[in-house]
Image (cartoon, rainbow, N blue to C red; front, side, top):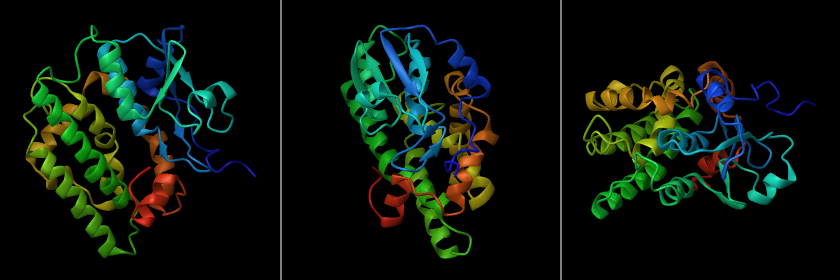
Length: 269
């Protein structure tokens, strides 16, 4: 029997494919990426939004890197030594392994301080404020988004509860946005951490009744600024390829570790 995701496009497409082609030469930093992220026996997300966070940061800062696509069905032994869980994003930096998207974002700031723009403000208070709202996205926005996508149309109360939770999380964040980006004119880590879910909100809009306008007029402007940022466009594949994998979540059939956590009411792994 073919693997469950055999019909999913295996590599980046569109603008993202062009970016991949520009980063094939060896560098001090190797960025391990993949069209699919597959914990255990199931795909978690189609073109992994956690993965895109790191890719956006690399492009935003102009850090030299080599892009390597990971085959989700045949992971090389070398990659498994880098991340024994076999998940992207992962980085090999001068022979040393680092993984987990939020860890990697801060690492890039520390390891490449001369590469601008900086994605963290220089002021200690503002840096702390960034981390507070990154934590909010991790705990209140991403899980609510997943609960909404996984809620089934024949469970209207559950669906509406998930939609209300998402709106609440986004409105709290919206009140802190200075515009056009979270911290004002500077594009920062809060924006990087959030934007992969903004570029995927067409899934919840088309299938679960989500509307940017229902969050607020400020949110509409903020979301537009995020999704049209050049570093975001350069790391975004074609939407029809993304839709295919989210169909499994929409049908309630996903068996990823993240999906299992959502069903059990546990924090995301």
